[in-house]
Length: 118
Image (cartoon, rainbow, N blue to C red; front, side, top):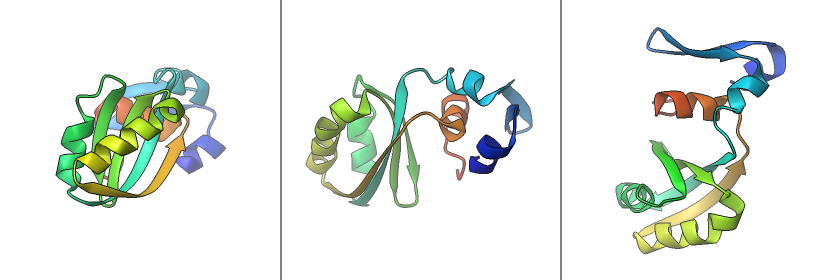
């Protein structure tokens, strides 16, 4: 997706052979709104961490990847301390955090409900 952002004027999001959306980077990322992507590197009980995050009212989507969780969150920078506390209380340990503004990968996750690597 990073290459598409750098090289393409228009992008199509295809999931299992179905065109989900098409447009410029700006048009597609506006579909996600003001939500941020939070990538958590997590060790320990990943399932418990996922279950703890899913019902939070400021968390819109949660998906797993091999090293942790990817969450779509409103106001991630303001909610980060609370989010990290909840993951820690679930029995998991956070070993890394990255907050990313919406990009084409966030659009894919928003439209398909899963990360690119799923």
